[in-house]
Image 1 (spheres, rainbow, N blue to C red):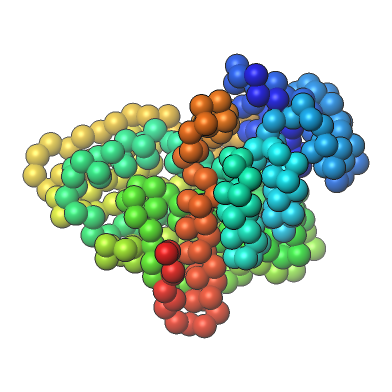
Image 2: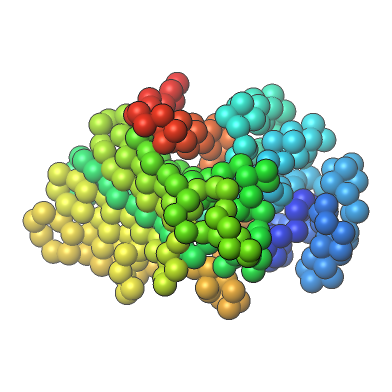
Length: 349
């Protein structure tokens, strides 16, 4: 039995980490910690376990084997490094950390500690994405030439129910929509194509997202990037917090022999349109939207199960610190590109 603690008690803990740990037969959820008084107590009352009072007390518990780190972005590195030093496995929410150096520090510490560090990139576990990766690897659409991926919704306040959410404040989030949604889609392209992005040209800006007092937020609410992969495939990524009427979370992969359409159709989560032959349509479970989360409609993301399985079996997790670092390098290159107005090469080693 893997004994787990959760550090940070926001919506991601309430909606995903805590309930998914409870659904896993190999896990005992021992408790919670949070810097805001009372939040850990509320989580403990709802899901069981106890309020540890502080992160230090939780990490000092020798019974705890692993932790989920669900704190604000700027504290990711500090808490993760402390957890590794305490001998815990870590499931870390994205983005990995607030600076590239911090990301590299986490990857290095994970390797030196021998403990598992896994990032919560849930799009890798969507059934249509898994099937699409398999089809691409098997040559179903030939050589990949280009791609288009988009992820947009009404903003963090839809998810957090807080119009002044820390997600929209630079001193705590470090990134805007690029680190919130863009990291998901960047990692997804790495997963689907099984190769890294090595060049970025990007633009980002604050177009309309505002705090409760009506002032524009101090982070980007839209970002668009042109990506080039190691093999030369080119594609676009658009992420937004200003899709006010509906949420979109879709991807298309274009190859020499056809197209794969992912989550862009209300009936079929994967559509294969070959240059020659019959169209294939697949029904898999959908990607849970923010509105569905608010309504209590939740699908198990598979993230917790993969993390626990890695601990139990000792196998490398699907997206460990080294793998997550690849997507973070792209995000930091996109920020540099948007600031300089130039294309930026990404050193993926």
